[in-house]
Figure 1 (cartoon, rainbow, N blue to C red):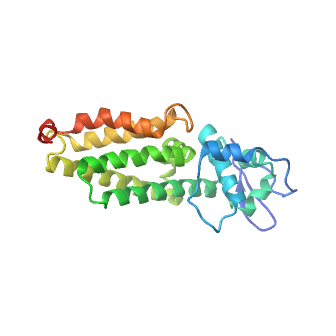
Figure 2 (cartoon, rainbow, N blue to C red):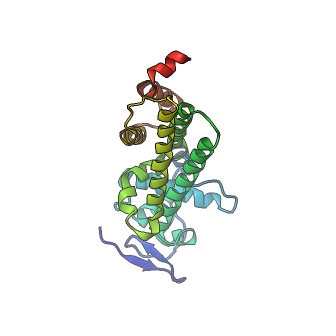
Length: 244
């Protein structure tokens, strides 16, 4: 795909290779359906217009389905029923939209993680709550999670998205500490390889976004319960279970 920059009269840059002159809005698509399917893509903010959030929801859905490189500004504008230049009134580039989508998801998820870790729960209960919070994000941020899974490694190598690596490091440290506490207080098996367990949990939790569909037969609650039944029985120290 050819990458071009186009500039409107205000001097803003838009990525996508199409003319940026705003000629007004065309007939729109069903915004409500996109909003319901793709979920929230930005944390609530009274200063943002409903239209801006609708555009983010549409963009997130396209990015998740087609990939970032294959989705142009024109694609987003066409889905929204506007011309490409109109997007500049809300975002200065395609990258700005991706940035806002991912920051909204990560800020929300890690805010929840920190609350859980600081709540004083036992290691087992903390791990259970972390897994549930992760799965709940599938409903709240479905498109953003899919984008993150597909694009985070590539994006993290660019200065604008350096925060992705920072969040990844926090994620690793947070889950490591929970597992280590569980081994120390005998909640988890003494022979547990913490790094291996962490990698297993990380990969098996997040891979589900590839097939999980919000509103489908399998709910987030049932997914989390089934997963925890399988995993926690494997991690838990049998002697700790007998002491209960």
